[in-house]
Image 1 (cartoon, rainbow, N blue to C red):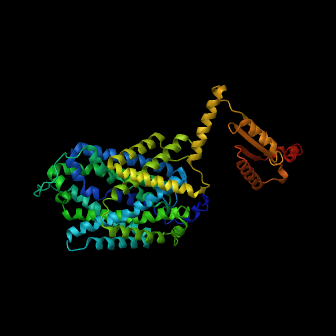
Image 2: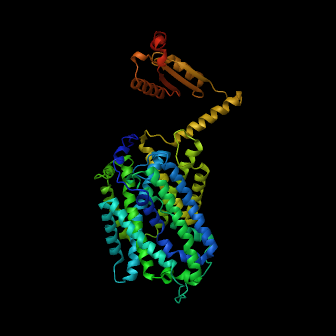
Image 3: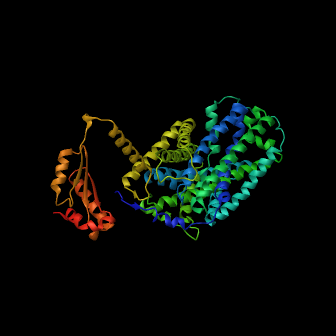
Length: 552
């Protein structure tokens, strides 16, 4: 059964606007973003990338990958400075730009990707712990870690951010120990991987997830003191900082380790660092910070989806927030259940590529939203951070290319899921009053077509354009039928009813328009109908207009 739900930009969003915890640019956006970017791939896969393609191609891979996320960051900056971004992060921005169906089609898979990411990161943490403590149970360690990061997120976003400061310090120490380290001892184990066994694009596909993670800060939009300032500058600063670090690390590894060691020892940085165990602390910090970012971001997306009535009715309670900070505690507990179920499975290697596809799909749609808005030059799209639409569309193309490079099957599966959710939401007949870019696209096409028709004579394709002053359309229905008979629903028919000022109001005007449109639809007559009020300056001429408006 479809549900025709009207969503207003005030009714849905006012509740989330109460949640202002005062997080700034550094703590609310930069910190979670940079900690997600500087993740386990940096620690465990950078050596493999360098050993496969060499220094210069590694730097090229880093640059190409960062360029795509940087273009996406520019698109995020444009959208964020055009509107007041509230709870929901990427979902909120997409739904307010491309429509609620597109926002939901991306937002629902993005939520599950974030929720499963919690399990991915805690399992990664548990695996590294079990390597050090072989007698410990991996699933149990992952489950305890998942509950721990969830309790931290339930306590407060502020406390979770403060915990990430400690993790950032651990990662900074590990990087400093790497910089002031020494040459690695030659690898003496079994040589399993040879240099140059993988091609350039295959290596890029392995490395690319290392530069993702920019959504971690965007997802905190409802908890920011000034989202329009913090989201663009915090996101771009994290991308640039990550790029600088990613340019330095391969240079250090290149001069301090041989290719065989780089390829066959995932913890080659531990061999190089001044204090080897600092790298292990960095790996743990990277996995825990990513888990914290996901467990804070996922419930906020879920909260926004519930408040926009996108979720089925039995799940609308997930939109509730608690406390002065409007914390989504119920959504956090719901996400904990999903994450623990995923931890129980134990092996998420098959799901990981699809989750990456959902993140890249979000990046792609954000780029498309900013690109289309900029191309249409809609009067309502006035971002203070201006980005040419060509850069946004280039970012979208880059996302699509990387998706197919990483995993064709996962790309197709992700596209099927997103399309399925979109079609399901269309059947729900959700309505919103905030407007989106689709109306702007139609307006641009119609205007371009009409302007083109005025300059190119074409008697073969001529269509009648009739203007019908029918007054009360039910009393002059014969005029409406005559216009329909002349056009056969192939031309344009505009029906007008001019209302007198002394008995009219906007509500009555809207009611008359709705009734007339319903009558036209039942009669299968395609026409535009409008009830118009005469200008106030013509009030003295009211007696002249009244006979026309009230004619039988």
